[in-house]
Image 1 (cartoon, one colour):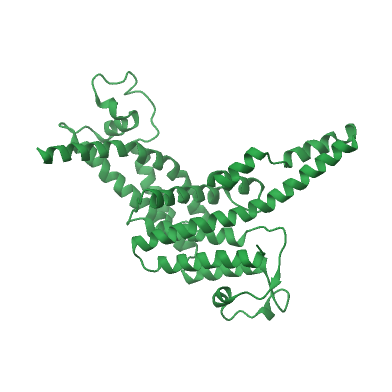
Image 2 (tube, one colour; image 1 turned 90 degrees about the vertical axis):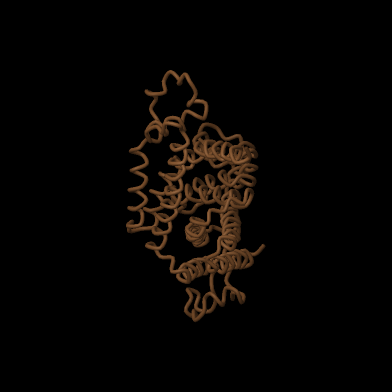
Length: 336
């Protein structure tokens, strides 16, 4: 596929995602999320394949050095070349696993994929999996997730790396986005270079959604606040389910020890084990969620968001069995 054709495909996906997101309906936002996830994966794959071509060149150089039978002079050079190689096993993981693809591009993609962007790509991919495979559509936070993912896709598009660039005139979809931008004003003076186009398209798409740094940090804050509000209600539900409601700190211990911990006798280290999530942790998350909205740069917000989300997601999974059991018990009660 030509570089222009790949750019056209990514642009169409982002344009359609923007159109779905504009509906403001969770079902349309779900479709936007699916498109954005695929656009992100294809963009990452293009950069990864460019890096893999370089790895193939390293492998070829290594083979030629071996054939030449060079002595000690080549040892340090061969060590450098070996570091550039990519094993067949890792290549398969890159093609099949989203997280492995993100890690490879961050490490070897010859692009500035910041750690916070890499972390948030994995977070949004997991969120997409919930919406796609389990139809787990959180109406309160899916729109903010779409805005965050859209911003990340624009970052990826602008920073894509290809083995070669093309000069040419864009097709109708890209031309419609560029609007009044005249190819005569491009760097070449008569046509657009694909690298230049990617930057222009990403900027225009963000502009169409008013997706500046402040909008991104607000979306990050709204997403976290929505999840924390649901988490707080679920903790109250668990607390109220006990005949004698325990303190919040005790409920947090029960959740992190697992459903069996509420039985008698308690685990030996129930009161002494250090926990990941405490009342102070919840307060810190709440404060941080509000501070993210005030971050000066989107990447600062992404960094804070990723720091909280990794632990929050794990804790949300620990809460889920308790809520499911309460729902089951209430259903049995209603059937009596």
